[in-house]
Length: 72
Image 1 (tube, rainbow, N blue to C red):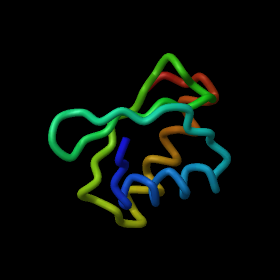
Image 2 (image 1 turned 180 degrees about the vertical axis):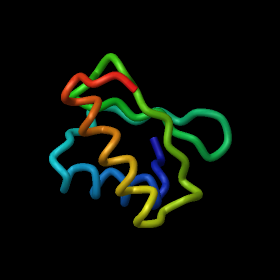
Image 3 (image 1 turned 90 degrees about the vertical axis):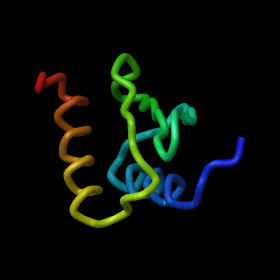
Image 4 (image 1 turned 30 degrees about the vertical axis):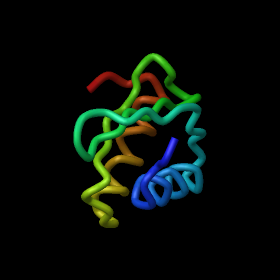
């Protein structure tokens, strides 16, 4: 499967933060579904169009809450 560079860069940032991506699946348009080993029952939808630091930081904070088991 051909994964866009923007998604690969996001995955690298998530892995630097301590998360482990287990699967990436393309969805409609510019969206991808990503599964993490830390919370496999809650796949996340990300877009390849936005690759800015603030979005990544907010996503990482959300993923930390999900990994701790906190509901939103």
